[in-house]
Amino acid sequence: WRVCGMPPPTSGGLTTLQILALLESQDMGQIKPGSAEAVHLISEASRLAYADRGKFMADADFVPVPVKGLLDPGYIRTRAALIKPARSMGKAAAGDVPGRQGNLVTGDTIELPSTTHFSIVDDDGNVVSMTSSVENAFGSRVMVGFFILNNQLTDFSFAPVRNGDLVANRVQPGKRPRSSMSPMLVFRGREPGGEFLLAAGSPGGSRIIAFVTKTLVAMLDWRLSAQAAVALPHHVNRNGNVDLEAETPLANLVTDLQAYGHKVKVRSLNSGLHVIKRSGQGYEGGADPRREGVVLGD
Image 1: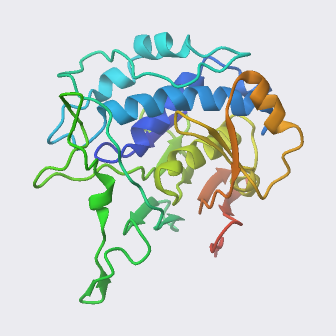
Image 2 (image 1 turned 90 degrees about the vertical axis):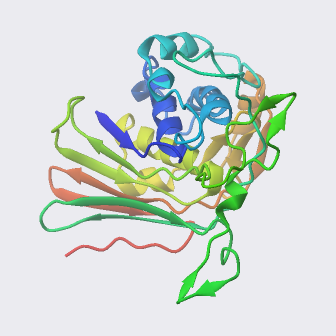
């Protein structure tokens, strides 16, 4: 497949692509969806990608983001070798990315979930996957000309320096804040010009990346329908605890993941996934049962 996402200043497309690339060497199609093995492998790939995200990703007009290096096949192979089938690596460090410049470091960025997403295919086959955010509920609490103004400033790291080194996502005049919005399009075949296969995206702050990645794996590797992929229980690892969705059956998942060495936290994970998938019978949609959303077609 050819998987396409947005470039910086959002970190969503690049981090999602990194996770998928890190999982390419795993036979994900043979692993049971939602199993401890599946959650472990996706979590470990997420640790590595989120570590790189924190250190290297910001507004490329201000920071030299090594996009090609982060997706370089040799670099991906080196990082993927850190994923062990039976044991968590714990907190991951950012990698030595080809083409990186300077000594930028990870900062502290707040991301508050007040985002929306929709996916649309029209009668002519044009496709839109669109994510929009005001950052927090009602943004800055100011309305101008019928528009709520956002408070995206919180997508920056408010600490510009750490241990004497500059933070990539520090506040600067005219700089665009780093987000996690991850509208994605997938096409058949690796080369440009392939047939459209699916569109996906979600709200959810910095967890958007995990929500979308899980859904893409569910549809591409596990061959689930759009609705089944969207409804599949969430698991999120942002290079720390494994967050498991509280409202879903967990069975022995917590203890199994702890046996891998993961620290596990059970919590509510309020996504808002909206997916359109093309099949031999036409188009099918998936709307997140966790919040408002609907699938419509003519």
